[in-house]
Length: 145
Image 1 (cartoon, one colour):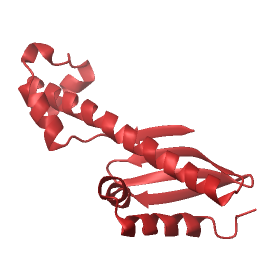
Image 2: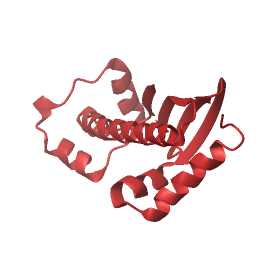
Image 3: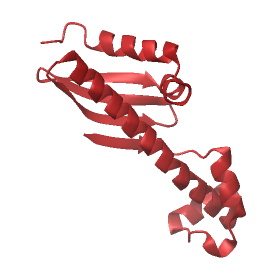
Image 4: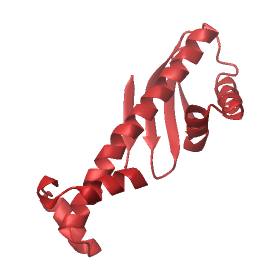
């Protein structure tokens, strides 16, 4: 199964941590990053801090994506159907997960709003759990073995 995060973003905690780093602990920017910083009119040190913040948050986003993939796999196993998850990608700009499942030799794309997943994992929301259940059930209509 492939797990991916397309794009990046940084939360307040990651930005604060990056601001607290001394300049000698910041990563050296690539030529491309320096060019982007210049085009945006951002000092290189500030841009390097945003890179640090984004990388730290990227790990958290990757873990969230992995958790969703495991949840979907568990749901599939619970249904006893011959399906598996090929890929789960978090699209940070679109605030959604793109899931590719395979069932009965067919590829099935599925989109899930990131806010529903957050509500489920972070708050244990029963409503979010029900919404996810409905999303999975609708995706599998007519495709069960």
